[in-house]
Image 1 (cartoon, rainbow, N blue to C red):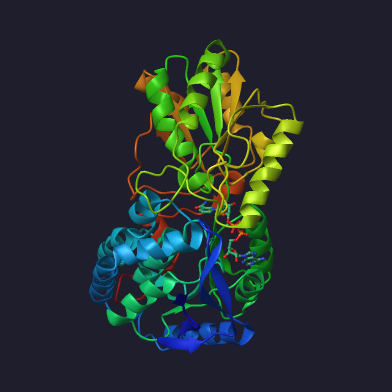
Image 2: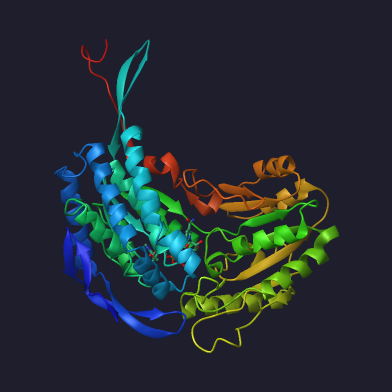
Length: 482
Ligand code: NAD
């Protein structure tokens, strides 16, 4: 059994208010328990973070010293990467290639990167003009509350925690109660590496715990990943004290297939992006736009490919789709499949529960054809293995206008034989991240959303700016004439 009853507060394990069962989504059986914070735990964690920030035990370390701690922690997490992979799969059912490649690899990817960036990005600058001279310094923003969802527990956490710690902030991290265990691996590695007590605290919990954290007067900044609805609530709460907020929210990402896109190659490369993490990914390419002249051919080829995907044991590296993370997630998917049918869309692959899976929360990868952009299944984020294929008439501009007809704007892809033409289409799509022909993005490029997909950018130097307050200091007679 995987049993943990302690939070991590002020540099040590502390007893949690309650524990919740950890259920393996591939079998539906309870495999352990994880800790959940109560109101007193949250207060304790925020106070510990505040004290560590005010007495400057971390922010006064030089960037070089901070970098050393982050690098050492990354290598400690790397030593247990396989165990961490298993922990992620057990909690949320992510398939092995996602759990190992993306989740359990995040500490190695992001901690050394921000360690390096701390050495250059925080340097003070002198700016002069005829009016005067200012020294511009970058101050850590203060106590940061990081709140993340269950679908991407390691990466969503490290996208925030790595730049925040590199910047010199103190952090209270709240994982979702569905994934209450894996963050402690990183907390323990950071402390073993020399992070001072109180600088990084882990308090898993649900909506109430999150709300308390967001409303806490000693939290200077909230960095949130999750649904747009919760993002809106967080902004409203933070507005009262003008607390800083950055948001990574939902998406309904369009994949624009141009009339010259090679059929088989496009289908083969696009399908894994549409069903990424069994569709439980904010960047899943779930709205595929295809020219009407090629529509039926594309629908047939895509549906045939999807029917050949392997649905099953998430621990098997050959598996394409695992279970949904929770029974509620599967119910949500079934609900949207029923909505799609009622709206008149045509199911061309999947549409139900896989017959060969008698346990766990599996759902067939499902493809709807004959979808138009006004349908709920084309407008609302389903967050499961359900993809819509929409026909478009006319030229590329028409496809772009349908792609942009969404409240979201997180991610998109464009597919075509002529890379220059596809790039020109990409430039007109209102989304934070656009890939052409399945190209992999540099981790160092900014990631985040236009519109209701978010506020601010993670990854790259842009993410470090989310945890800094620029300060200008002008000193008469020392730094220049005033
Ligand atoms: P959610 O918004 O319900 O929950 C996310 C986190 O917020 C959890 O830790 C949850 O406990 C907490 N929370 C819930 N209500 C809260 C409240 N009122 N105040 C403070 N915290 C609260 O999201 P979810 O359904 O668990 O996750 C899926 C969503 O996350 C999808 O919309 C998905 O697109 C989004 N997501 C976005 C990104 C991104 O980078 N843009 C990445 C992953 C997931």
